[in-house]
Length: 120
Image 1: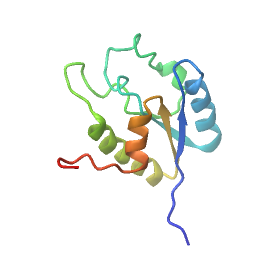
Image 2: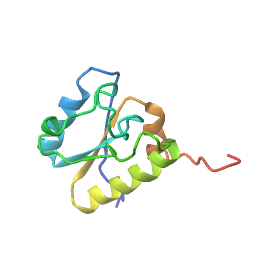
Image 3: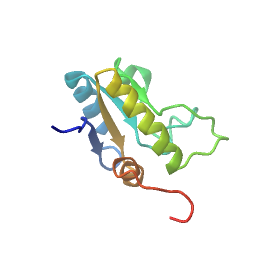
Image 4: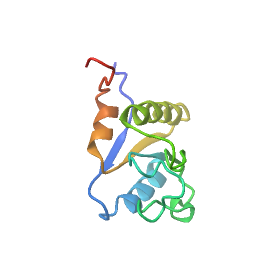
C-alpha cells in the first residue's frame, strides 16, 4: 500500500498559458491552485507580476496570492512552509493541489523538502 498523495505541478516561462490551463484543469479534477510565484504574494503588485484577477479565477480557489504587503519580506523558506500548509489543507478537503509558477527553485524546495536551516 502506498501513502502517496496527488499533487500536480504546472510550470513554464511567462506568458505561455499556465494560468488558463491551470483553471481548466482545476475545474475538471476538483483542484485548487497554489501560486509558486515569488512576487504574486504581494498585494498591489498586479501589473508587473501579471497576477490573475478574481474574474479570471472563475471560482477556483487560489493560495499564496495577495497575502503580504510590499514592505514585508518573502523568501523560499516562507514559501515552503506556507505551500506545505496549503497542500495539506487542500488534501484534507478532498481536493487536488496544483502548484503553478515559473520559479523552479520554489517548486523544488516544496517537492524535495529541501532543508534551508543554518549550516546546511
